Image (tube, rainbow, N blue to C red; front, side):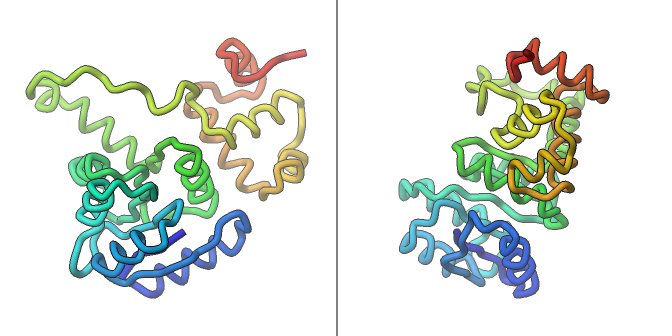
Length: 220
């Protein structure tokens, strides 16, 4: 993984978070867009965590150049800017994820897992802004929308969320699920909240029934 951000405190903070996730290794850091582009093309990391606003080339410009160069590295943008127009520009440039900078460890892990497995990820708050913007009358009255693209993934849940859901369906407690998946109880709780939001069900029994009907879990 390569981290690109011109603020040293941000890079140190991300390194601290990643230190608790032994599945990910940082192999390089960049402090501006030009350095980031050269480093990514040289090291070919699986994932790039990149600030959207950097000296020299912006994160969006770096993503565009990586896309045009046929880079296999998957880019997750880090930004305090949640403007839907900026988010969509970043995605069109070739980014695979967009995280608000006030992210939690649990959300960083979800994003990394999703992108590493070929999916995309938007912070829930960012996704909310994008959806709300798309639903505004002036947006609906704009040019006819192109045919919808194929969904990013068939399941509404990430692989890790399905693992947590399977534990819930088996009647395991939060601590038991955390121990079995080798993650923290807080991460399990975050995943459960995201599962409930995505499936639209709050109580455990209803959540399991909905998941079973969708084929996400099997009930004995």
